[in-house]
Length: 137
Image (tube, rainbow, N blue to C red):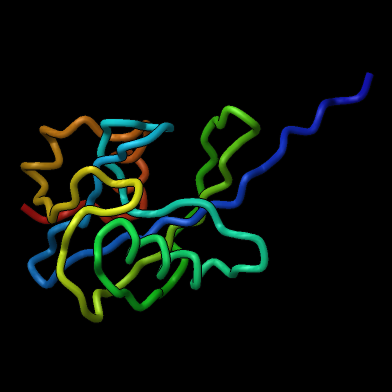
């Protein structure tokens, strides 16, 4: 018997902290995770590299231009048409004014105390904690 291969959908996310240690989050306005808070990110378009995709996604969702740094880690999540294969990178804000856009209904900087009160996408808190990327209080 042959195991069925599940399509992997390449995605990226940007883990962005401000100088005060707050974490940038967006409230997703579409599935998956509609209404829940997550880091900005999305699908990598055909012919696009991870770094280009992150810069585009963060700008579209938050209005902020970022510089992409090191790869923090990789997670997979279920998708309607396969599995999301998500690569998350540390990012630094270069310019822009924070505002929600594209697939985000809200965008904000959060402290650890605020993070604890928000409905987050599945596994986000645990993943950020494992990578040492939780916001400061």
